[in-house]
Image (cartoon, rainbow, N blue to C red; front, side, top):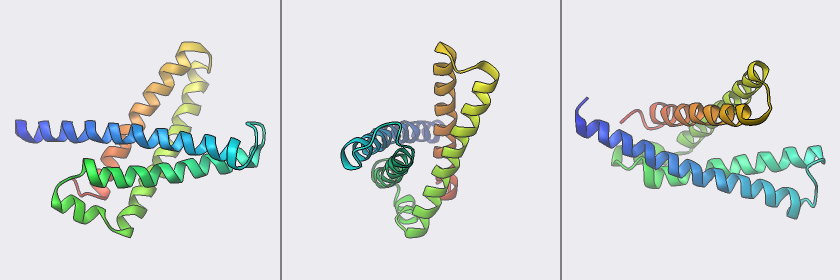
Amino acid sequence: MDKKKIRDNFFEFVRYAIVGGIAALVDMATNYAMLFYILGATKDDRWQVTLSVAAGFVVGIVVNFVLANTFVFRSSEQRKRGMTAGAFVIYAVVGVVGLGLSVVLTLAGTYFIGEEGVWYVLLTCAVKGIVLIWNYLGRKIFVYRGK
């Protein structure tokens, strides 16, 4: 792989990470607004929490998809592949697998290192990093065909 291709992929990944951060903020804001303002619930209201988390996840995936198609995967071929209903379904499936990875890796990590203090924070950061890489590679390979 030549230096230009490496540089282009690096900056594509950086753009993807920024878009992911924006989508995560939208996810959290939607979750919060849904739980406390729309449903008028508290963190102890289980079905409302579940509904709020799901709503945040869906809105976050949509925002991530739109922004990634606009700012991350910018070649004409990538845009053509990315702007279909089928591409969105695959994009969402990759996100759901990422969510599953987050849960499994976090549960496994807390089993081995515990859930107290700095270790949990480090575990969460490691899991987020792994899932970020999975989401980027999964979407690049399965939606944008690695181009």
